[in-house]
Image 1 (spheres, rainbow, N blue to C red):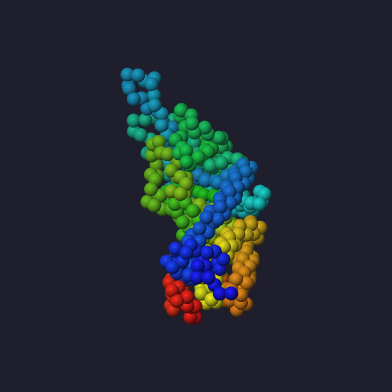
Image 2 (cartoon, rainbow, N blue to C red):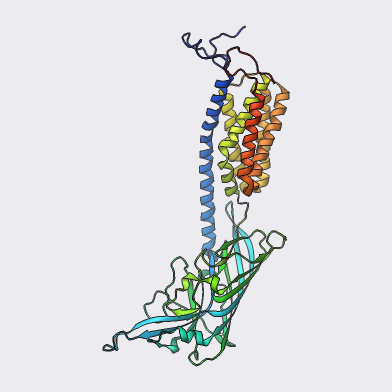
Length: 472
């Protein structure tokens, strides 16, 4: 039976009104390509629903990390030893009973910190949360004259309340008593209420959230030369550990069994061997006095600036670089281009085969790509992103290739579809892994796809006026 001239392009069943049958070209490849492009954009909508699922899972991971942190202490920022003495002023000599108070602070001339962090992952439902147990050792050298010079000339120091301070952001993580010595003398630390409006109170930045512990130190008013301090503490926490530059010249060395660290904060390590060994990493930092940007001594200095997140601290985030939710989210960002390439591949197979694919068949192929992202997310939670991508991509490629074989009525075109779709999924995986070259790779791949389309369709009668088949 011959095809009626009023048949709609590509479906072989619908009829055009007689008044339009002579105006719209039949079996027009041009109209079909425009329709395919519109469907590709429409198929970005299911990807938005998948993105919502990814966001929900990411929120669940954050909540799991918070729940684990409740028991071990959250992200930890550590402040090394600092010397301080309160002072008083009499603003009005006629009213000697009215006094104002302040704090003179002296940082160490040189400070070293050695950190050994053991990290393990604890499971909370589907989620793994990195938890660390860190042993921290400080050595610091102070100059007694620096603390005395920090007291304003019109103030009277209260040497009986002079103290040595150290601190951590979350005291729930402290596992043992903090061992502190000053010139060989053992000091007893006590918690400090930083909100007291009296001598000994400190202005702490709310974002720093460092809880101080202090020990009274006698004899600083007559001390001469260097004062040597050591401090040892053990604390636990989750996800991130950082040390502020507690001395004019601060050096930090960290050793850990974690193989995938992310160095954060305001100062990156001078040297590290992360990613070079399966046994963990070593890293060394140094912050010189001028690079620190904080006075070595002074009145009413804010200790919070030392441990301010991301400003001057030296930190490590214990998170898997290949976070499955981040990887799936990145894959979804290329969703429109990805579906467009798949639809373009189907359109080229349609042109080369001479068979006609219905728009509904393109929609089914697009839905298969959306389900691919769901499979990727579900498998990534169980097996990791790489293996999940291999399994989900294999399932989707085999399905859509077998469908192409039936749509275009040829095993040869099903095999071509298998090769082309495998290349498209391999491109998507490379975009996930080569983050630094993702834009370049995506741009070149898109250009190559358009060039191939132009070449294959160079002899097509786009208007369909002569109803001529494509020459391939």
